[in-house]
Amino acid sequence: MGLVVMERIWAPWREKYVSSPSDKCIFCSYKEKIPEERDLSIHYGKFSFIILNKYPYNGGHLLIAPYRHITDFLSLRKEEITEIFSLIRLSVTVLNKVMKPQGYNLGANIGKVAGAGFEHFHFHIVPRWKGDTNFLPVISDTKVVSVNLFALRDKLRKEFNRVLKKE
Image (cartoon, rainbow, N blue to C red; front, top):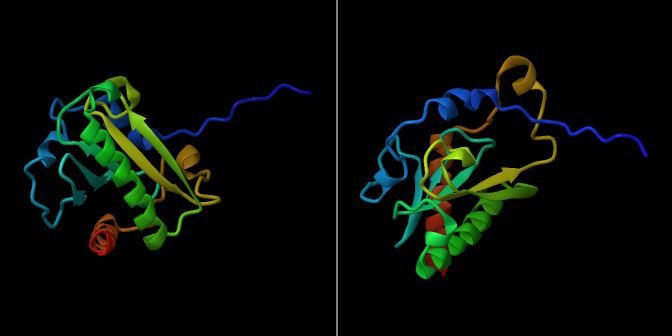
Protein backbone atom coordinates (compact mmCIF):
# COMPACT_ATOMS: atom_id res chain seq x y z
CA MET A 1 0.00 0.00 0.00
CA GLY A 2 1.37 3.39 -0.98
CA LEU A 3 1.40 6.68 0.82
CA VAL A 4 -1.99 8.41 0.88
CA VAL A 5 -1.78 12.15 0.30
CA MET A 6 -4.55 14.30 1.73
CA GLU A 7 -6.12 16.61 -0.80
CA ARG A 8 -7.19 20.11 0.24
CA ILE A 9 -10.02 22.23 -0.98
CA TRP A 10 -9.07 25.89 -0.82
CA ALA A 11 -11.63 28.65 -0.21
CA PRO A 12 -9.65 31.86 -0.84
CA TRP A 13 -12.81 33.90 -1.53
CA ARG A 14 -13.56 33.68 2.24
CA GLU A 15 -10.18 35.11 3.34
CA LYS A 16 -11.36 38.73 3.60
CA TYR A 17 -14.47 37.68 5.53
CA VAL A 18 -12.55 35.51 8.00
CA SER A 19 -9.44 37.70 8.39
CA SER A 20 -11.24 40.97 9.14
CA PRO A 21 -14.13 39.99 11.39
CA SER A 22 -16.52 42.57 12.70
CA ASP A 23 -17.16 43.12 16.39
CA LYS A 24 -20.86 43.15 15.51
CA CYS A 25 -22.55 39.76 15.77
CA ILE A 26 -24.62 39.26 12.64
CA PHE A 27 -26.89 36.75 14.37
CA CYS A 28 -27.83 38.97 17.31
CA SER A 29 -29.45 41.48 14.95
CA TYR A 30 -32.00 38.86 13.88
CA LYS A 31 -33.83 38.67 17.22
CA GLU A 32 -35.94 41.76 16.51
CA LYS A 33 -35.63 41.74 12.74
CA ILE A 34 -38.62 41.80 10.45
CA PRO A 35 -37.94 40.26 7.03
CA GLU A 36 -37.04 42.90 4.45
CA GLU A 37 -36.34 42.83 0.72
CA ARG A 38 -32.53 42.46 1.12
CA ASP A 39 -32.71 40.23 4.19
CA LEU A 40 -31.68 36.57 3.85
CA SER A 41 -33.90 35.26 6.66
CA ILE A 42 -35.95 32.17 5.91
CA HIS A 43 -37.81 31.32 9.12
CA TYR A 44 -38.19 32.67 12.66
CA GLY A 45 -38.86 30.16 15.41
CA LYS A 46 -39.52 30.80 19.09
CA PHE A 47 -35.89 30.30 20.21
CA SER A 48 -33.91 30.24 16.96
CA PHE A 49 -34.02 31.21 13.29
CA ILE A 50 -32.87 30.15 9.82
CA ILE A 51 -31.06 32.34 7.28
CA LEU A 52 -29.32 31.76 3.98
CA ASN A 53 -25.56 32.06 4.23
CA LYS A 54 -24.40 35.27 2.54
CA TYR A 55 -21.07 33.54 1.75
CA PRO A 56 -22.32 30.07 0.76
CA TYR A 57 -20.23 27.02 0.00
CA ASN A 58 -23.13 25.92 -2.22
CA GLY A 59 -26.52 27.25 -3.18
CA GLY A 60 -29.03 26.63 -0.39
CA HIS A 61 -26.37 26.83 2.37
CA LEU A 62 -28.46 27.56 5.49
CA LEU A 63 -27.49 28.74 8.96
CA ILE A 64 -29.52 28.02 12.09
CA ALA A 65 -28.77 29.92 15.28
CA PRO A 66 -30.41 30.56 18.64
CA TYR A 67 -31.51 34.12 19.34
CA ARG A 68 -29.50 34.08 22.56
CA HIS A 69 -25.87 35.00 22.06
CA ILE A 70 -24.18 31.86 23.30
CA THR A 71 -20.70 30.68 22.43
CA ASP A 72 -20.91 26.94 22.80
CA PHE A 73 -23.14 23.92 22.46
CA LEU A 74 -23.15 23.25 26.21
CA SER A 75 -24.89 26.58 26.85
CA LEU A 76 -27.96 25.61 24.83
CA ARG A 77 -31.14 25.16 26.80
CA LYS A 78 -33.27 22.05 26.25
CA GLU A 79 -35.96 24.00 24.36
CA GLU A 80 -33.30 25.56 22.09
CA ILE A 81 -31.78 22.16 21.33
CA THR A 82 -35.20 20.73 20.53
CA GLU A 83 -36.13 23.61 18.24
CA ILE A 84 -32.76 23.79 16.48
CA PHE A 85 -32.80 20.09 15.66
CA SER A 86 -36.43 20.35 14.52
CA LEU A 87 -35.39 23.24 12.25
CA ILE A 88 -32.50 21.19 10.87
CA ARG A 89 -34.95 18.42 10.00
CA LEU A 90 -37.41 20.92 8.52
CA SER A 91 -34.61 22.55 6.50
CA VAL A 92 -33.55 19.24 4.98
CA THR A 93 -37.20 18.48 4.12
CA VAL A 94 -37.57 21.86 2.39
CA LEU A 95 -34.21 21.72 0.61
CA ASN A 96 -35.04 18.21 -0.65
CA LYS A 97 -38.22 19.59 -2.22
CA VAL A 98 -36.82 22.86 -3.61
CA MET A 99 -33.24 21.96 -4.60
CA LYS A 100 -33.12 18.15 -4.68
CA PRO A 101 -29.55 17.75 -3.37
CA GLN A 102 -27.90 14.34 -3.34
CA GLY A 103 -26.45 14.79 0.15
CA TYR A 104 -25.70 17.25 2.94
CA ASN A 105 -22.95 18.48 5.19
CA LEU A 106 -24.26 19.36 8.66
CA GLY A 107 -21.96 21.05 11.13
CA ALA A 108 -21.73 23.53 13.94
CA ASN A 109 -19.44 26.48 14.51
CA ILE A 110 -18.50 26.55 18.18
CA GLY A 111 -16.21 29.45 19.10
CA LYS A 112 -14.63 32.27 17.14
CA VAL A 113 -11.79 30.13 15.77
CA ALA A 114 -14.26 27.63 14.27
CA GLY A 115 -14.40 29.67 11.08
CA ALA A 116 -17.17 32.23 11.29
CA GLY A 117 -15.09 35.02 12.81
CA PHE A 118 -17.57 35.56 15.66
CA GLU A 119 -18.63 33.51 18.64
CA HIS A 120 -22.40 33.08 18.25
CA PHE A 121 -23.02 29.32 18.15
CA HIS A 122 -24.73 28.17 14.93
CA PHE A 123 -25.32 25.21 12.63
CA HIS A 124 -24.61 24.96 8.91
CA ILE A 125 -26.67 22.92 6.48
CA VAL A 126 -24.88 22.63 3.14
CA PRO A 127 -26.66 20.86 0.28
CA ARG A 128 -24.30 18.77 -1.86
CA TRP A 129 -24.42 17.36 -5.39
CA LYS A 130 -22.07 15.00 -7.15
CA GLY A 131 -19.45 17.13 -8.87
CA ASP A 132 -20.22 20.35 -6.95
CA THR A 133 -16.52 21.01 -6.42
CA ASN A 134 -14.24 22.03 -9.26
CA PHE A 135 -10.97 23.71 -10.14
CA LEU A 136 -12.18 27.35 -10.36
CA PRO A 137 -11.51 28.34 -6.71
CA VAL A 138 -7.99 26.96 -6.92
CA ILE A 139 -6.85 28.47 -10.22
CA SER A 140 -8.91 31.65 -10.47
CA ASP A 141 -10.02 32.61 -6.94
CA THR A 142 -13.63 32.13 -8.10
CA LYS A 143 -16.49 30.20 -6.53
CA VAL A 144 -19.50 29.44 -8.69
CA VAL A 145 -22.81 29.53 -6.83
CA SER A 146 -25.38 29.09 -9.55
CA VAL A 147 -28.42 30.45 -7.71
CA ASN A 148 -29.67 33.93 -6.99
CA LEU A 149 -29.78 34.19 -3.18
CA PHE A 150 -32.87 36.40 -3.10
CA ALA A 151 -34.87 34.30 -5.56
CA LEU A 152 -33.88 31.18 -3.62
CA ARG A 153 -34.81 32.89 -0.35
CA ASP A 154 -38.30 33.55 -1.69
CA LYS A 155 -38.73 29.93 -2.84
CA LEU A 156 -37.48 28.59 0.49
CA ARG A 157 -39.71 30.93 2.54
CA LYS A 158 -42.72 29.82 0.50
CA GLU A 159 -41.91 26.12 0.95
CA PHE A 160 -41.17 26.51 4.68
CA ASN A 161 -44.58 28.15 5.12
CA ARG A 162 -46.29 25.42 3.09
CA VAL A 163 -44.65 22.61 5.10
CA LEU A 164 -45.35 24.31 8.43
CA LYS A 165 -49.04 24.73 7.56
CA LYS A 166 -49.28 20.96 7.02
CA GLU A 167 -47.81 20.18 10.47
